[in-house]
Image 1 (cartoon, rainbow, N blue to C red):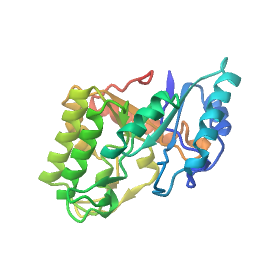
Image 2 (tube, rainbow, N blue to C red):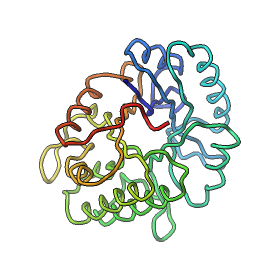
Image 3 (cartoon, rainbow, N blue to C red):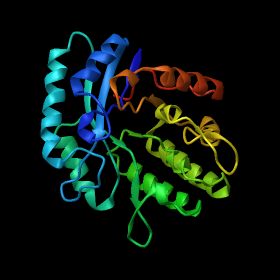
Image 4 (cartoon, rainbow, N blue to C red):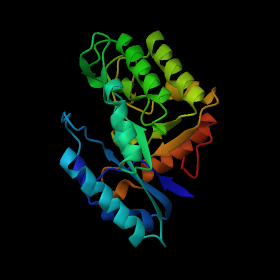
Length: 259
């Protein structure tokens, strides 16, 4: 069964297409399940590149309406991709219980540094930051609110060569995923970004082969996510490549999703 649980729409301000555009594209591509996971807003702070909090209920209502309209053609799920902040635990709980979301994805673009300030992973000045980042991910997984961690290797987007800190960060993430039975996502959108030059040679920003070689040695559940930002990406060559590369690594991804 073709599935995708990592789907954005125009509400996040950096994607194209309405929710219904993605549903129609998924049906044309032969998907059996499609999960919406646009970037989740916070009530009190606008961290950018996400829907305004004022649109949250409209987004949820729209997905509910599409669930009913396309019931005979595809199974639709209602979710959000959002960062973990310890002080927002009550908010995550309210999203799942009060707002009726089917799932939350942990997409940690920014995180709380050890000294308390907020930092984006793209601002990491050294690989030592990756271990701090990984511990934030692990703490998020331990809450039980997140079904999966998306692009868990996104820390390798920076201009740093793989080193022992990268190994440590990877171990922290994988160990937490195994202990909490949290799914790790193999993110197809990294392929769409193309190969970049790095100090240790040309490669994709993510997925990073060293990360997934370590994952292949662990009893961790893995899914492929499109991270689509336009309808044509719901299922495309990047998705096909993701499945092929996982097979080469000896990783059998979840084929029916995690719901």
